Length: 76
Image 1 (cartoon, rainbow, N blue to C red):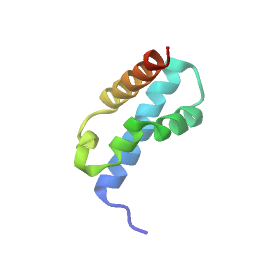
Image 2: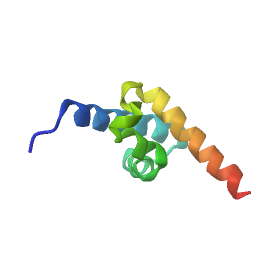
Image 3: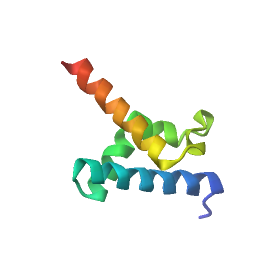
Image 4: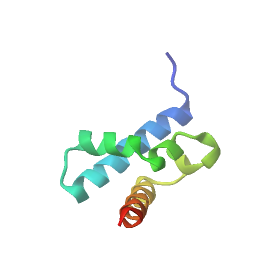
């Protein structure tokens, strides 16, 4: 199976953003990765039409944080 350069980039960015999230939340990289992949931000990253893959891992991790904050404030 051949992975396109876009898919490879998206996978790499997801992994790098997850490392950022794991450090901040003091959780394992694996747990952070799965949390990220279940998020709307993770979904958007793998949707080529959003062009989110053109941003760096810090930006993507920040988008994830904003999403989680919005979810948290919406629940309260």
